[in-house]
Amino acid sequence: MKLYDYFRSSAAFCVRMALALKGLTAEREFVHMRRKDQLGAAYKAINPMGLVPSLADDDGTIVTQSLAII
Image (cartoon, rainbow, N blue to C red; front, side, top):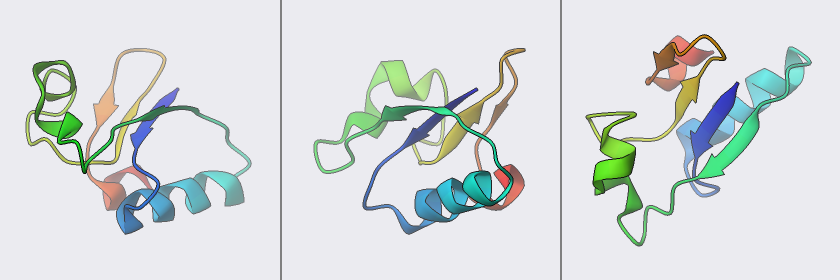
């Protein structure tokens, strides 16, 4: 499982807290929002809306809204 997030994102923070409370660990991939990395083609292939967080499961499922991830 891989979590695409940015350390200053409050939505991503909530997801990190929920994962920790559930005892789950995820590999973290940082998407630097101040440099507009979320608007690049590589990240848009993961989340076409260009928002963080996104959670990619090991089976290829990608969930893109923080409340849906939680």
